[in-house]
Length: 309
Image 1 (cartoon, rainbow, N blue to C red):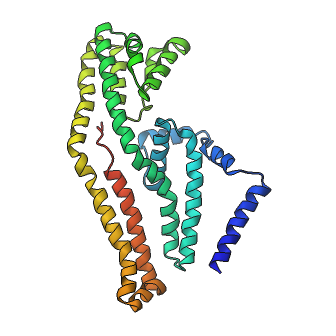
Image 2 (image 1 turned 180 degrees about the vertical axis):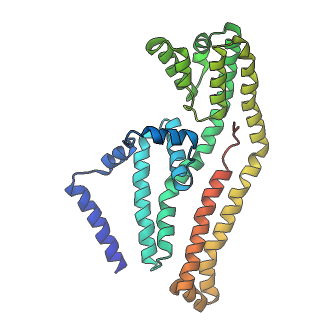
Image 3 (image 1 turned 45 degrees about the horizontal axis):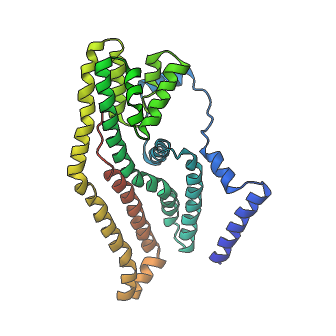
């Protein structure tokens, strides 16, 4: 019966796409577009400025995944990621229904829907390490040129051929903004902040902005760039320790899942209690929840070391 319901659901979904003339590709493109929201009121702006709300939980995971896609030049894939997440959400719910376990339903739907975003965050670790290394080299040569010429535009132009992606695209946009669009150098520097999602880079930009008012502050740039070197050294020393939680998580997850067929071999009555009774179903839901929560925690722990202001 459950199999027939599953077939009927997929047939209904495919029929809905055909009736409304929507393709999965169009749906992904639509989801990738930013959401149009109402212009906030002055009261809302003041409240947000006084007390900034930090994103937590699922909203923070989705935002971080979208930021990673933007910085890696794959922002157009966000819609497809959302479609895959929606498909996995339905798949998780169907698996819970197939097992006739209502306790498992919210756990499986939410957990499966977050898998694509967790995958993006986990695979972004290598990219962030490369980004920190490229930032260290790029900011070092630009800072050296700026100390000599005292012109940030000239310093960027001199070293632009030696920069690599994604840093080179950011400074190309800066040159285009400052030379062709708006002569306000301070405004062009302000727009650099946040483009690489790196606190050290944002601090370096703030220091360069301060140097436009007082050239004697240019000596503060070198210590800021040296923070990237410290991050690289510390990350290399602790790289093995960072992946220890991942190894332990995989081991414990395999043991937890492997215990279910082991119980069937040892005692079928215990297995029947675990699968077909309400307390057993609740225990399975708790086990699944622990696996998903541990997955989120492990991904957070295995991120490369970053400097926080």
